[in-house]
Image (cartoon, rainbow, N blue to C red; front, side, top):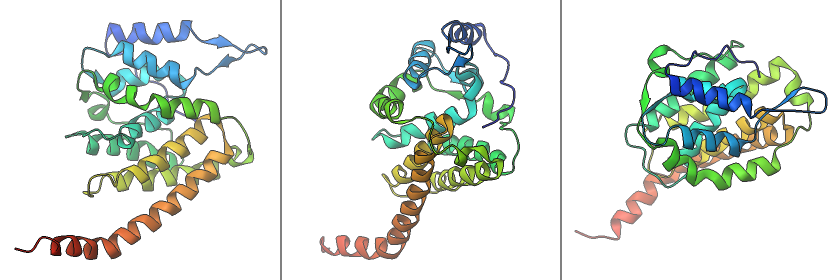
Length: 236
């Protein structure tokens, strides 16, 4: 999926991280650069931003060519973990939604400077992404190019981005604890499929969106009844 030019490094450390990442890039037999593994990207983020606040601009520099799609995947991972995100859940959902909206409109991904320069707290990536290593290893093993016609059409790519946009809008809603998991999983599946041009994962993203629709419909219909029943168990 096309992306716009990466932001310039806002600090020397970010520039060093990007330079080191480029030096570790390997070439295929055809002489083309081979994208780094997800686990390598995560290790770079954990090592580079372990003790200090980090901005999204610096993260995008480290992520390089597939920055914005990778960023959507990485920012949705914390929602899959039983970790509180005080003050951050809205920001993460907003960033994902902003990127996905641009893709739906057929435009290159872009984020306003206000979001790019917003600082995430120290140890954000070490504490949250370290817990997601199992998810990333699973993706690393399972993702591979297949059913390529699903990723060859710009029109289809816009529909795929729409799935991510709808799921990210759910993340912005004031929902009960734990209900962010289904939409976040949908984003991870679809973004992973787009990253590696994996048609099976892309189809899985649509299935995940359908599951979200059914889940939240049932939650809306029966959630209140369940709450009233639970309340009745504790008479005044």
